Length: 81
Figure: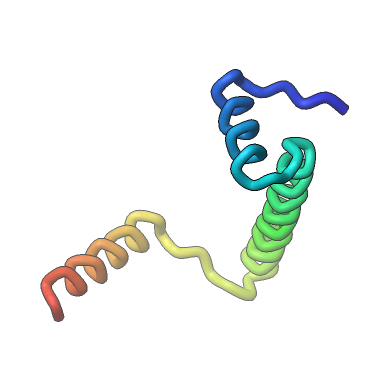
């Protein structure tokens, strides 16, 4: 398989390979494997949350209300209270 990247990304990859003493292919393999694992975990979490909502095990909350509460919590932290 070939992977095409921008010249800027190729330079960063080659610089990292030089400073780390690892082959660029090894760096790409490790990075891609980690990314794919993260995406699989995210998909699993989203599927689980969707199933919880669909089965009514959890109730949805209003997005605006959730953001309001987060802003209030942030304000309290900033003000020291």
